Length: 483
Image 1 (cartoon, rainbow, N blue to C red):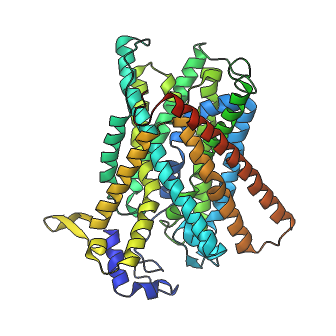
Image 2: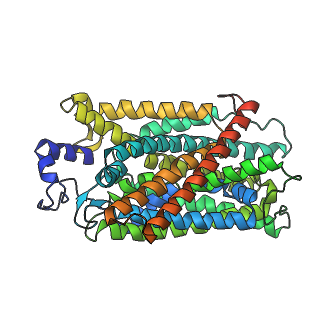
Image 3: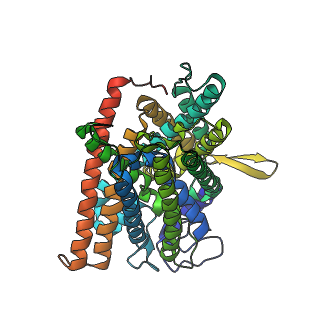
């Protein structure tokens, strides 16, 4: 396994050699002494698409309904452009000080440490790992909603769309997903997740296309809802206060759909070199973000056109026929989110295990690898720390998801929490420090203005999502939510 080989290298003095960029490449190790990286622009694009296209895509029809044709499409396009720009800034920070030949920064925190210092690194770590954990909780909620949707679709098909007994608890489905994720969590690292990301990326395209086709069919059939340039109307659909809060939550939902920067550095660390990692990463950013934005616009616009101002929070929950196709779409979502869960959880696992290794370097519980063999071939290797620590993380995430299963409000809160600091602030500040942009120069002022505007958007989304969670808690109790 990759982890075992890395440990053997470290044991043999790899730390001292790894910091030397003149390390001799023997075909098995990279210039830093770690196992040879094999990632390409296509594998990295698959990882990014898996991270981006997730539960956020399903809320875009609702978000567009709150902002209207003009505001909804413009916001999706603007967020896409900002994310692409700042992701490219982040790609240049993988190596320091030179983006091509400098020392590697393996994690987002390493990049911040190298460019902005220790205090910023600590702040980044707090935000990053809270956000990553929140994403896992959000994906648990979304996957359970899709599993319930399959059950409901079959129930409505059998008993009619007005049947009152087609209401189910999310809890059993969350528990089932948690058990499955415990097994997947034993995959040691990102380098061995490529197959899972490829499957998840295919699934994301599958359910997005089904959602678009179902919306298009509804539009063509003449059953489309009422839509307006400005979205839900005050006095007809909502009150003025509700309209404001909904718009804020819509901004948070769209921000959540583009919040994936916290795993970009870990993904970039899988790239082989040459060519330079930052060049390949920028190509992958363009491919993945342009691809997902196209799907986002189709889902948001066609979903809004189909449902109008009554667009549901999760677009697929608005369709019941053909029930088998709706079932297939929801199954695709579950498969995709099962993979995306691990993409976001891996950096959390990696950080926890690296801290444990530093504190107890000679512990067999922390370091020991126990291979499982069939004949002379090792098919799997497990580690006691990995088994216990990752299992506890999944159990805790599942319990928290069961306590707060409010789809749009949770997505908006996660979006507001992660978008500004991780997607905008730190990449911008690192770029300023790395390229030594003069304070109060034109470029410095433009970058600071961009950061300030994104901060205001994040604050507005946080206000709207907190208000939404408060409203949801008034009508339902933790652990007793049913859909």
